[in-house]
Image (cartoon, rainbow, N blue to C red; front, side):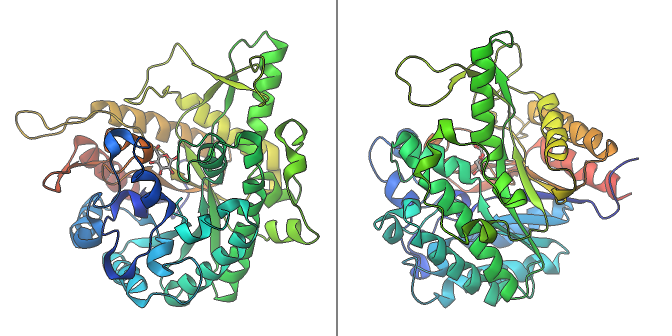
Length: 442
Ligand code: BGC
């Protein structure tokens, strides 16, 4: 059968991970500026202050994209460039940056795909409770409106939030990502407030004429550590609700899954909220990297699961198991779970890190990345052959970049970045992806 007519190939990035220029042209501080500047929070104390200096080098980066022959580029807007304090008036210079980028992409035949929130909450909003504060949802919808006011005439695809589950778990639950709060199940209100933000932003975008709206969710199939253990299977079920269903089911069905083991009573759900959250969307973004091993919680763990290592698989540079079958399983499960309610899918992120460095000849031979991408794209093709409606695929990432609390250690790019000189060197996977796209276009 093959991929559908018009299938789109792309690459993805995020503002804080590549832009740098942290204080330029009126950009305000976000929680990642604060968090990464706090000693001990990121590997070697690294921050996104300079990152890939994409704010200045974007023409070169657009050239690299054009060289790949991609159809679409997924990037995120820095909320604090557009609205430096989170509320209040827009910052025209911040919007100008995205305006220029969007025009340059269109000139090269690349469809812009904008994510409104990739984890860089304005610090002043965090000071008022951040995602624990319901009002943040409405500040976000206003930001969505301002961004669309400027860009909706040229940006076709819009995503509200990137991986809200990571914000809840890592940002507010365990405190390993900004804003660094370790509240365990008391982080659960951030789930509802983010879902509400998503729904309110959908309404705001629609009011500015946006037609193609989605969300980029993180999914990770749960594997019980011991499939014969009922306790491990129950734990995997609880993990599955948290990771794979919490941010999808309310959107597509207007109902929460059973959150009784996950502190569901902590959610402040008001009258119209679920209707807002379930505002129709046009696609679902799927970010997939790896499955997760799950075991029954140890004594004293307030969560209904513990994470367990998944053995028996090759791993990436970050030790993440490489299991393309789990990607296929995930795509099948979305269709099985939601049936006709499932909108078309875009794979909004998929990729891997390896410690890639140039060899003596200057080339970066990342055969392991090629193998990872090849196997995952094959899994996606199988899902499409089985009837899953996938319209596009974005690999993470165009460039090596700031990998959050891991600093500049892991390298996820098709293009190597020497952070001392900002020199970009396309890796072998860049040529491989370019050829794959060319062959697919015929
Ligand atoms: C995030 C990216 C991140 C990637 C690799 C995804 O969860 O959206 O920002 O760099 O995973 O960790």
